[in-house]
Amino acid sequence: MPRPRLTGIGGGLFACAAMFLIGGLDWLLFDASLFLYGLFFLPVAAATALWVRPADLITAPITAPIAFAAGVWPVSGGSGGFAGEVMGLVSALSLHAGWLYAGTLVAALIAVVRKAVLIGRRRMPRRVA
Image (tube, rainbow, N blue to C red; front, top):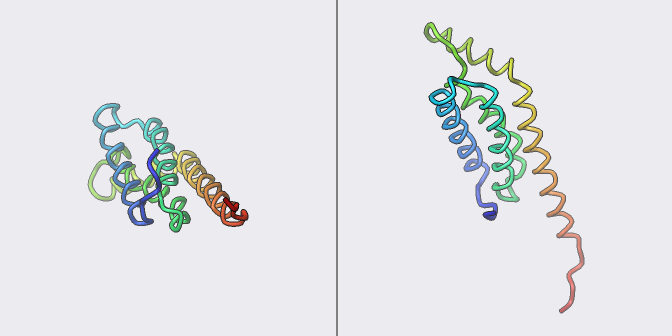
């Protein structure tokens, strides 16, 4: 697994781009299945929390819901102009909030565990060679 190298902004851009790509592929291949979109959201949220730098760990649970909202547009099913698109987006976000909460929880748990490990390593006395 690669070392954490993404900044907070880089993690957010990665998550948003990945979810928009997944949303577009889901629309093309699976006829806009929000179940599959939500299922793919979980590993993207986990990867974002794993690949962000330790200094930017707090951004992982913040960028997860933003990425979910950024990528749900292709699969939201809105039609009939701007108002129809907005209503489709709001409906998709409200009806599939369980996936949103689950992915945010995954990102938050990974960030908390990584931070606890970092704090534990910092507090351990250094061994003398």
